[in-house]
Length: 114
Image 1 (cartoon, rainbow, N blue to C red):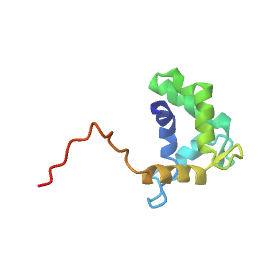
Image 2: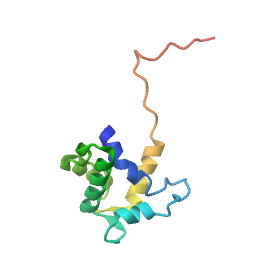
Image 3: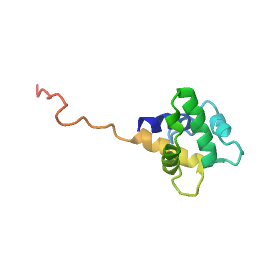
Image 4: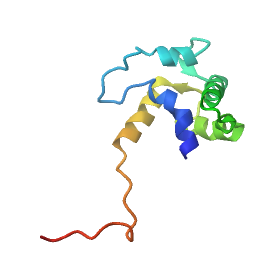
């Protein structure tokens, strides 16, 4: 899970959450990843981004083909083989509105009724 987040980090900057202002970069990160300029990211473009991120992080496993496959399938919500800005925005919105994880029952401190 942590490794998927590291790959997703650059994509988190691409599209704003539904209620947020547009990113300060004006979509430049998406445009940089979108090498052919067609307004959507294909698997090759996502793979290239993952490899650059893996190199920067010093962890080649971040660019493992099976991790890229899982990540791409997660992003490509409509299954058309491309990731567009609306799919990234939907992912960010879902992540932003996800409830915080609950503490396991045995680890939570008892609440004082006073």
